[in-house]
Image (cartoon, rainbow, N blue to C red; front, side, top):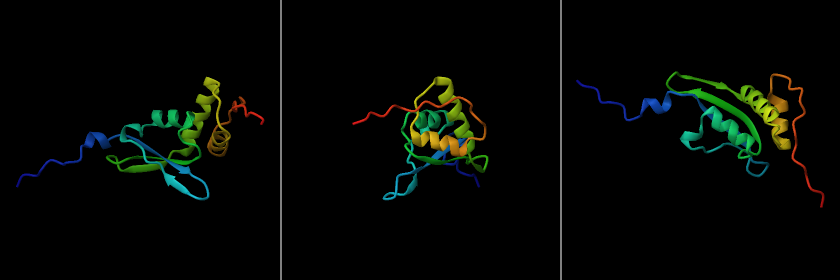
Length: 120
């Protein structure tokens, strides 16, 4: 008996996939953000968090379905975000600063730049 080829393309799953758990506040709670398949790589997640597309990230998980593993990538992502923010002298939100402070595993001796708030 011949076996049929899989309808699931293995090349789409044989990679590291990153998903972000975000806090939407007391009314909506926390949820894993819906993300386009093409935007689940580490570089895109870092760029999207730094640009403010995720307001209150809590946790980042990484998994590879073909290799059969998953892990909490939050500390690695926090370290990478802090390094990029420092190197680019980027303005970051208070929520992102708090995320980095709570999850980074390495000390960053440079003060992260916060956006200026206007006084009304």
